[in-house]
Every structure is written in structure tokens, then in C-alpha cells.
Image (cartoon, rainbow, N blue to C red; front, side):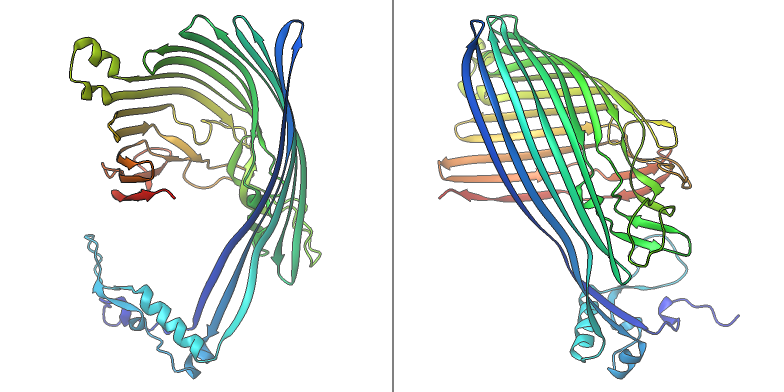
Length: 465
């Protein structure tokens, strides 16, 4: 069997290829808006009518330059071919006993080796464009506000037409896709003044969540042997929602508020990260790949979410005055809210799971001080586990199970002092508890990712001109 290798650098792994990519994505966006307002009486009631439109055009493309040098040119250029050329001077930093030794690569030395290869005049350069996608949105809306003795009613609708055109290189040609979509979003809001300090708000609302426009580009990495692909999904449709809200608000002097509300939303075509069929994409080589398995963003079935929200905000100013305490204590205050939800969604394979990205409970609490130009905030946020991906989001199942992000909490602190209208000092401290980000499959004991981000501190001054 030969001698036991105790250092991986003892293996004979000569350098056979060296590559560098640089570049990235660029985007341009243009938006034009027009809003008009007219006020008039209707049946003796004052009515305000607003209407207008918007046109947006945005383009995003990913273009990279690739340098590639292979074994023959590496040898001709006299470049070093062992790992020692890019290794750092430190050994393994972990505590797990491996039974062998190794060094980490040093990014600076790796870049220097590539620079040396480029300077040799050997190797080749090429330009690759991963995708080029353009989205245009033409929208128009009308909204009317009718005022009554007890409050007001706001009703309206928005119409959006979206066109997405994308292309991406494939082999010796270009794959193209175009999607046109028109959506209508009606809404009605009732604001009822129970008295001078209390309000009841009722609403019917609609909305949609589209895949990011670059996720709709036909950018593909195709494997003809296994008949699979990964990349964008031009066939993904918007996730649509409609729902009802009911909120009670009690305004407390001097600047406080207590609110409680319930909400319900029905969602259709829920978006998941998963697997589907590639569908009709025009490839320049003429091969029909519509049945290939595509790893991308896919639509599932319907979903819904029901929830309750409670919020409270109150400065201590009035309490301090009534108790006769020193006035500087009036700068303290409290903000807190809690949201409890119950949700479900249907995957493309018909399973019922929680709505992706939704926690059963979210808590926020802030203790603050604001007085004499000085402000400080200590805030804590906590959310329970939430679904990030399912094991069978399309036509195939992956091993393991559904993927979740583990519950987490974060403690942040910030301070500000305003010396004048144009000069302010600030200090921010984030993630003071240094909580990790953890991802698991099916059960929290099956951790697949554990990452610590560390505490972050930032201080400086802002100067207004």
C-alpha cells in the first residue's frame, strides 16, 4: 500500500488548469410617473379623486471576462505547479483530529500566480454573458376618498402590465424567452372614527409577488447526459394574494398608541425553490429540451395565512410629569409588538407545508431615550423557525426533507447626538449577542448550516451641506 501520507501536499497533484473570472452584473433603470388630483362634491359629500400612471424600464445583464490557461501553456510559461505556490504559512486551524495535515490557500498568492500567467502572454481570454434581461412595467390607477362625519372610505384599483424579455448564451447561440402579464389590484379601506382617540380600520386588499426579473431570464446550465438544467424559469408566474384586515387603534397622549388587529390572506401560485420541467425554450441547436428537469423557482398550489398583531408605543413623558420626577426622565420610551400567525401552502406535488418565509411568531421590543439632541435605542428582535425550501418542490424529490432556518434573536444598539442642524455623531452596534444563523432539514437536530457573523460596530459623523 506504500507509506501513509500525513500531509496532503505530499500527493502528486500538478496544476493542469488556471482560470480567473472578473466582471459581474450591471443594471439600468428609468421610471416616469404622473399623479393628478381633483376634489369635488358628490351627493353633498366631499370626494377626492386621484389617478395617474407609471412607466418603468429596467435592464440587467451579467457579463464576465474569463482568462484560461491549460497544462501545456503552464509548463511553457514556467509557472509553479504545486500547491505550495499558493499555500499560506498556517496549518489546520480546527480542533477536529483529522489524522493528516494541510495548509490553506492564500488568496493573495493565488492572484499573484494568475497575474504571472497573464503576464506570460500565454493562455486565452473570452467574454461570457450569463444573461441579459429587460423588464417594462406600464401601470395606471384610480383612487377615490369619500369623507363622512364618522370617517372616510378609500377605494380604488391599479392595473399593471409587465413585459419581461430575456436572453442567455447557450453553446454557439442564444436562448430567448418573453413573458407578458397583466394584473389588476382592487382595494377598499374603511377608516371609522369611534371617538377622538380611537379608530377602527377595515380593509380588503390585493397584491402580488413576482420572481425577481433576472430569475425569469433563460440563463441555463444544461446537462444533456442527465437531461437536467439549472437557472432561471421564464414560465414562473406571480404569486397572487387577496385578504382582509381589521385593526383597532387607541391613540394615547402625548404620542403613544395601542393597536390590535387580525388579518387573513389567501395566496395562489405560491413560489418555491425547487424542480420543474424546462418547458418550451428556443435553443439554437434545434434540440427539444422541454422535458429536461430544471432546478429553479417554481409555482406551487394555493396557500393562506391568518394572524393576530398587537403593538404598543409610549414615551414616559406624561408619566414623569404626573409623578413629579426630573424632566430628563421623560426622554425614555417603549415600543413593542408581537405577531402570531398560522399558515399553510400546497407544494407542486400536493403536500401541505407552512408558507415559505413565514414564522409562527415574531417579537420586537425597543427601549429608547430621546431628549436634548441625544437619542439611544436598544432593540431586540426574535422570530421562530421558518421554511426556506421543500424537498419536493417540483417533479422530483431530493433526499433529506424540508429545509428550515432555525429560530433566532438579535440584539442591536444605536446612539445619535445632534450638535446642530448639519452635524450629527452616530454609533451603531449590531448582533450584540452574536447569535448564529442555523439551517436544518426536517428536525433541528439535523443541522446542515451553522454560521456565526460576529458583532458589528460602526461610528462616524454626518455633515449636511
